[in-house]
Length: 222
Length: 222
DNA sequence: CGTCATTGGAAACAGATGTTTGAATGTCAT
DNA sequence: ATGACATTCAAACATCTGTTTCCAATGACG
Image 1 (cartoon, chains in turn brown, purple, green, red):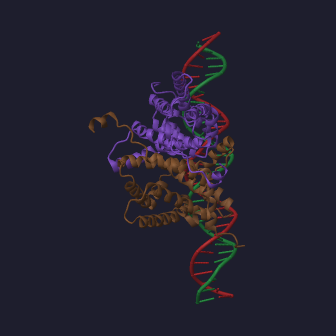
Image 2 (cartoon, each protein chain N blue to C red):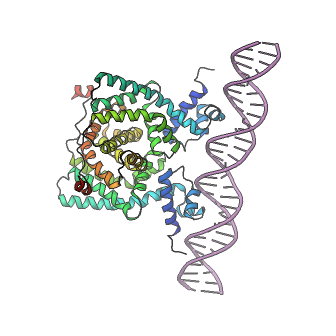
Image 3 (tube, rainbow over the protein chains, first blue to last red):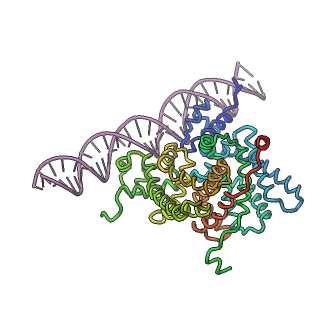
């Protein structure tokens, strides 16, 4: 009877799916525990609180991701031996790292949807937790992007990176809904890898877009 | 004592702010009514239910928006008299219509944050409501975009439009958090108009990006 | 001035929520 | 087998949720 995974794993497996489908506030502990076939108290026993459960769900994705991404960046830096890494390769590496992690065990859809929720849901504790726990990888990545795009003003690069973050998270986290529309309208089934293929030239073009016209004030000053 | 706006308006004004700050599920009717200084029962009396209140909050933004946007598109079509409207002008018109509406009475920040929530929150009823009520403007807009970008395959244009929708909604709905970081790191205060200025070349470049490499299967077929 | 429909408000409702409790059960090393 | 420990379980807890009820206040109209 111990053929199925242990309680902690069953809770996490169920919770991540329900969270991804309905959000955090809209998913009760009773939803989770009944579907996972564990006792209600098990969540508070193993995780302490619902907040901690949410963070644990994220950690199970983000911990392996950061390890892999750091390793991939190490290898990339070694390959270019002190030189500048082209933007395309940086983006490619990030995409590959994101795609690899959930492929092992979980679904990319869930992963991206969770990331989307982390940004959009109130849940201040989550943003803080992710920032403190995983901010360093992002910092390392943005520094490499800075070297790859020396002609971009810092502020402009900052905003464009976030523009593209929005593109990716929004698209992949709302994928199910969009996929339904796309399939109905164009009869074309869209896989995640297909979407990444479509995203690549768009993101590159966006990062390399011409600078915006300066405001009148800036024109006068510059 | 009737100097302040009536009950319905006070409820809507308060609700939209709280919804934008904390999401729908995380905002209780008691939060709203106590802050708006109206009786708890007033919400159910005037709106019927919390769901309807949420929809009413959206309607107060989207109704004027669709009117203005349709009018702006009418004018644009008349100006080009049957010819094709350039993509830049279409995007420009959309941006102007979005910016105009909340300027009158409410904050753009709230408006965009609500749009972001409409996509990310579960709230199936909301997506359905918005789609049914306001889908036609979006359809008209996308048809004009189709004429402006005849070289793009339909599916590609569909996805790129949603990529850009993600860029804009994600950025403007998480604006407060991003603005804090940007100001801390670059000392530069960022207004919404400033952000729109930065978005313009990025969105245009993204829409005009080269087509993605075909998949091996497509290469073989095509 | 009196009538009556409409709007406002305090209280109560039924149900759901996260969390805690204390006993029962299982699992090992001794 | 016994004792120590970790886990599971059913039940209760207090609190919060959206909604409804019922009565008082209000205001328009004959």
